Image (cartoon, rainbow, N blue to C red; front, side, top):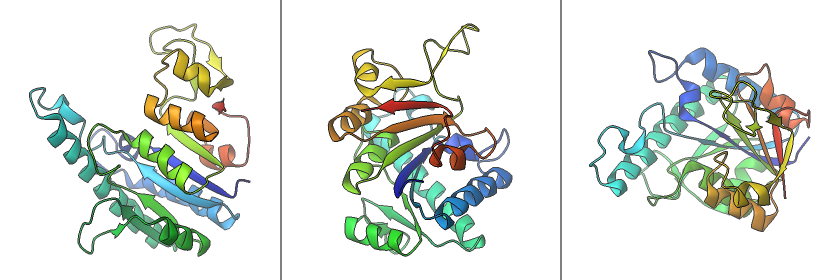
Length: 232
């Protein structure tokens, strides 16, 4: 088991076709993380905002900065919802943001985050970097570097990295292991390039796997060979 991880999931992973939050999905996610914490791994969580907002897809003429600011607030809403789901399952969770949001969240501090983790709480990083033009992948990599995480885990709607788009090419082959340098060199769209570069520079390994597989988070954290391992 890893000592400390950052887990990134998309906002869409929390939803279904009719609701922003599917409570069955959220509970399944929370219970997996609860088991991981009880097994001694410190867990930080980053959640996207795509179940609420998809950038300028609503209006292509919208100012990018404003669109990104709405996206940051969407991640805060997701974090608050999931934090309460943890509370209902008896797990302490704290939402930290890089911007001050009154008493709703706690402003990010490495020292406070480490204290929460040592007390068995899940720390949820929301609000991105607090600035536009950066994705939630980037904040995942940045917090991983700041907190000396053992690895980053990206839970996706696809079960790893493929040599071509499996939705288009039925003969696409899954890649079991790939160097972070190759992701950058070939501009593979598996994680944000800024995040990939930071992982490469700071030597943070990455695991990319399918969220919908049975107990996939626990299996990935235990070191089972699922998904794709990105080596550094």
